[in-house]
Length: 379
Figure (cartoon, rainbow, N blue to C red):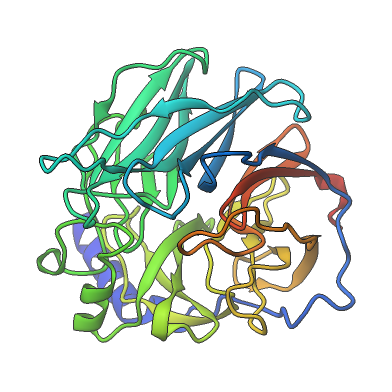
């Protein structure tokens, strides 16, 4: 009887959920919006080399702040790109970047490309994830390393999935871990996040073999959808998981799209357009201690791809994100031009800790900055 009920619920959900969901914001421009009182620290700004930095993530581990990001010589996602990390005990002072993972070489001798893919922690262990592919975006692979002190790291651990994550694993209500990818959302019921990962998507398995920054175009075209990528999700109290998606390239029309799951991420609805504005950038959703849902990203549509200002939007019901704050809008000046480098506040990732929200971003895909503000400013 229970299985029959679940089947009927899923059938109804597939036909109605995403189509009826009305997730939206009311952002027009920053005029009149309150500015949060923030603290900020530039973790990394290059001098003579390693001028590309992007895909940053932050976590608290044993009372320390740990940051990681992709680090390349000049251009985005080019051979030789590595993953580095930095540590702070006080937010204001950060260690010099140390290498977490160096790329190996493909059979043709060309260095592979590594991409930072976020953190996860369990008990006294920190897990850092990173993706790998070859220059032509083939042989995509997810790896992880573990540490108990955020200084010394294990040998690479094979996650056995062909994925470059958008965000690291996040736990849903039943404890399952889900990774937000471009169009695939692998899950595992292993609480360590180190095994049991299963690939999953709203696309049929026949339309893809790997998920990285070049593979989301073809399945979208074959499915009659715009290029959907770089998801981030939140789960409401009814158990529904809401995965918002960026639209990029020629499909960009200034709106996020949405796919949803009613069975803990095992199945996903066909994506539909939302009323949530977007500048064509990565974003991060989460939940505050007071149970309100939040979004951190770039909702401006007037200056496509400028990625400015960085905005916080709040919602009490997970549908209407109608309370907006400006987090930051100051400019960073690029030191060295490179392929696809640009965007003032790139790819935010957030964390809540001890009454603060922490936000890590790249600046023009060159420098890495961390911002924090006290949550008691939010009315």
